Picture: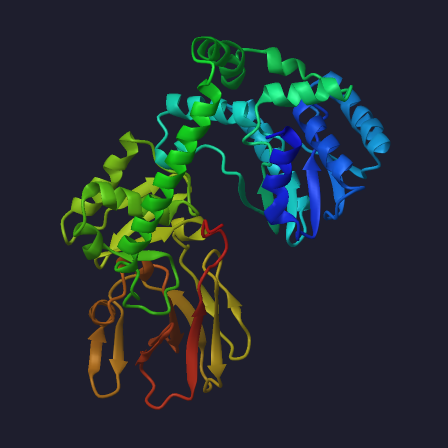
Length: 437
C-alpha cells in the first residue's frame, strides 16, 4: 500500500471532523504530512485544513522556522497559525517542551476538531524502547495510540503505520524543503541516542525490527484494553455510595478490593487513579500494601504525586488541593441568605430564616456537646460516629453556633438542636483542584 493510501485509510473515520489542524514543526515528517493533506484538498472533500506551528524559543535557529513554515504554507495555500510558548525549567527539557506544546495545541482545538501529528512507525519503535528502559507497564508499553482526546477535540496520528524511510522517499520525490532541528543530533537526550544509535543497529541486524515493534505495541494495546475491562469489573463492586452521601469525593470500598488478588488490586487502582495522578513506580506500591493492611482503627495515608489516599471507615478516599491543608480555626458571623466563604474549605449557607441571635460558624475543637430534641445532651464525637462521618472530614466540618451553644452540624439535618427548625445549614464542599482531569 502506498504512503498516500495508508494516510487516506487512517483519515477515513475522521472525515466528519469540524476541522483538521496539522501540527507543523517545519521538519521532514510534518512537512510530508502537510503536503499529502494539501494535495488531497483540491480533489476530495475534507474538513477545513490549517497548520499550527509551536515556537518554543529554546534555540536561536528556531527563530527562523516560523518564516520557513509560513513560506511553505503559502505555497500550499494552507493557513498557518504560529503560537509562542514558554517552556518551564525542569529535570527533563524534552518533557517540559512537550507539555508546553500540547497545552498550546489543546487551547487551539475547538469542538470536534482534530490535531494531526506526524509521528510515524520509527517514532513508535523509539517510544517502545524508551518505555521498556523505564520499566513501564503494559499500558505504557502500548506506546502511542493512533488517536486520543485532547482539549475539546482529538489527536490523530495518521502516519503511525508508515516508516520514516517512506516519508523521506516521498519528500525527495516531491522536492520538499524542510528544516533540521540541531538538537536532534544531541545524543545526551535519550530519545536521540535511541534514534541515532540503537535503532539503526537493531534494524541492521533485524531489518523488520520497526514493523515488529509496531506489532508488539498492538498486542500490548489489546492486553491493556482487556486489563481496563477487568479493572472496570473489579471497581464496580467497590464504587457504592459512602455513608455520607453528601461527601462527593472519589472513594472506593476497601472490602471488595481485598477480595481480589494483589495484581488485580493494583490494576484496578491504576485505572481509578489514572485521571487523578501520575502512577507510582514499582517501589512506591509498598504504600498501598501498608494502607491496605494497617490495623482497623488506624488512619493510614498513601501519598502520591497528585494527592493522597486516606483510609477511613473501610473506604479509600482521594484527597488533593485544599483537602490536604487543614483549615485554621475560625469564628465567622453567619447571616441567612448570605453565603459565607470558608478559607480553603468551600462555602456555607442558610436555607430559610434564622431566629434572632448571635450566629457564627466554627470548626470542631473537641469536647463539643449538643442538646438534641428527645435525646438530651450528647457528645458530638459520639454523634459523628453514629452518622459514620469519616475521621479526615471531622476537623473541617462546619458547626453552627448560636449564643455560644452548638446548634447544627453542616449537611446533617438530623443533628440540629432546634426542634422543627425552618432552616437548613448547608456546606458546599471545596471543589477546586481535586486532581480530576
